[in-house]
Image (tube, rainbow, N blue to C red; front, side, top):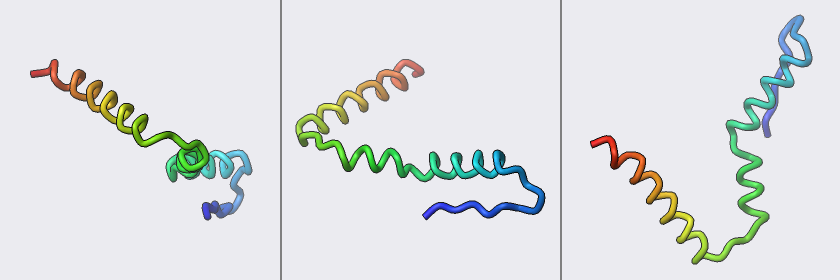
Length: 63
């Protein structure tokens, strides 16, 4: 569970901003979306190959 303790004389908006940053960095929402939406293994493999291809194409041109 993510929590943020308020420091002395800290604005609530600033504490909320710190909480949002921690929430995004932890990847909770990404994990939730991944678990709720089912995708077939063949589609996951296809997406992984496409991602690797894009990564290879972007790094391959620098040599």
